[in-house]
Length: 369
Image (cartoon, rainbow, N blue to C red):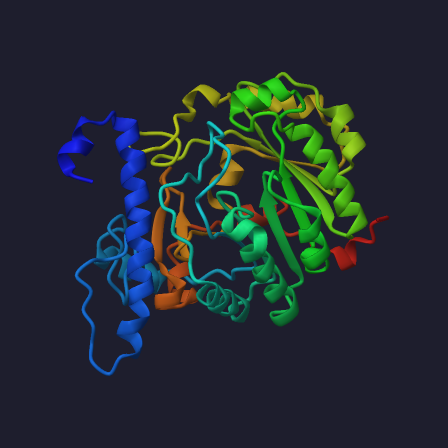
């Protein structure tokens, strides 16, 4: 698309078009990159994949090199016990507060993703959580299914989980891959369908809550632990969910306070404007107090969330959220896990404090399926 045409488009639409172009360019460059690794003559690519670097060159958003080198000397690398791999940013929902938005359409080739997961296992990973975007969009669930099977069968990980909006999951997926999956977490922010539509979880005539109950039943039938994730925001903060959560009986109900991340759901270069969804700490505490009798509730305030997750993006770069935006490390595929994880901003103490390590293998849960 000609630059002059882009300039005449509304700003928001221009951002979407540019993001799509960046994603397609990234995928093209990645497909060419292996040639430079295997040909007898060096191949120099005139175009670089966005945010991707071969070798020790820092990414554009990273601190200057001297600071990075000093930080690398002074800090010991944490163990990647539990990792969240957001292998795609694409999604079929439009949740207004989303803090991992569709800025690229890039997805690693399956074998490269497996290589990175094997590196993480060698570095001490015990639990992998696949997320997005919507993980079941890529080849309608086959991509994440093969990764789940690989992590359980080949890597022998104690825990393999997925976070999904649930709209694209079919029973045939459970029949093929359910035995390899420990936990399926479904995002559900309200049991009022009108509120779900306001938030951005509406899909025409499809009912998000009805689908949630169907998925709950499949989890029972195929021996997958069922979990619910809810983002508490301005539109659902007054809701009483006690009856519905009790009836669904998840192994865990993760309750998140709506979080602003610059460049994702806040700021000039963001694809969402989540300010209207934000609630105060007092509002969040009142919601928690209303649901204090639900034993599986696991609350996560903004303070607990920001630095207590190890997040890998679609290029397998750790994302540091300490400064209120996602600053990427070099990819583990380029520099290794130990070198990359030092720039993750991961707070291991907060991870343990928020209950990040729990009984996460379905073999140890002893649930009544």
